[in-house]
Each structure stands twice: as C-alpha cells, then as structure tokens.
Amino acid sequence: MLYPLPEILTHPPRRRLDHQALVLNADGAVLLVETTYRNGYTLPGGPAEHDELPHLAARRHTETETGLVLPLRTLLATDYTDEQLLPEGVTFVYWGGRLTRTQETIVGRHRPPEQIVGLHWVHDARLADVMATDQHRRVTQALTALARGAHLPFLLRGIPAG
Image 1 (cartoon, rainbow, N blue to C red):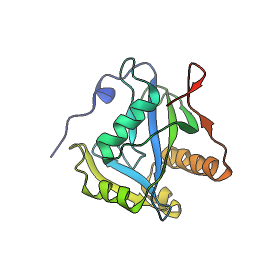
Image 2 (spheres, rainbow, N blue to C red):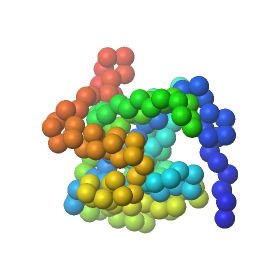
Image 3 (tube, rainbow, N blue to C red):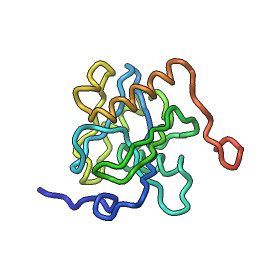
C-alpha cells in the first residue's frame, strides 16, 4: 500500500527545522522510528508548526509516533544539513531520557499513524546498520554529548523551558 508523502516532501520550505528526541530504554538501546517515506530509521520527531515552540514540536511528534509524553528541555546536538534532495535544514536533538520498564510498555502498545511502519529499540553497535549515514552520525554525536554531560538547556527568551 502506498501512502501519500508528507507535506514537507511535496512542498518543502526554504529551510527545514526539525526537532527530534533521543530516548533510551533501560538497557541503553535507542528508540528509532521506521517510516514509509524515508530510507533507514530515524529518531522520533519532525517540524514545528507556525508559532509552535520547538521543544513542544519535538514532544508532539514523539507522542504521536511513540505514545510517550516526555519533558524535552535539554539539547544534545544541533545538526546543519546542506541542500541536497531536500532544502537545507537544521535538526535539534533533545534528550528524552532513559525510560522505565513501564514507559517502555507504552511504546509497545502504541499504535502510530499509518506512515510509521514500526518502532524499534536499537543498541548503538547496530545503529549504522539501520540508519542513513547522516542520521547515524547525528545520533552518535548526541550519545557522545550525553555520555560526557555536554548538553545545553533549551531556553525561551533566556529562561530554561518548563
């Protein structure tokens, strides 16, 4: 069954701004999304709507795709992508946290939208096997920042987002 392409692929903006969440399970595996319109898995997330706060866009997409409602207040990585098949873009990766076993069951029971083929827990040693190169590098850098404690608060007019 073919699904319609998302609006961002049929009428792309001049610059894409994506907001993704890095979420780990209790075993340290990364939560990834498999879609109908992208080669390889990616972190949950997507673009903000007009006047939508960036971290809330990441939270909305993460909830829609995975069923999880997470406080995304910390940035782990910012990734610029030059224009290739899509317009240039900037992706912000927020720390979604390490889930409890109870939260993991939410992901297992969630029924995502039809353009989401599956939700997968993947350990870092296998990320390169299931992700596009740029996506893999982004996640690796975010994991490295997390391990080093090198994260930044997401600010709204100079105040940490609540």
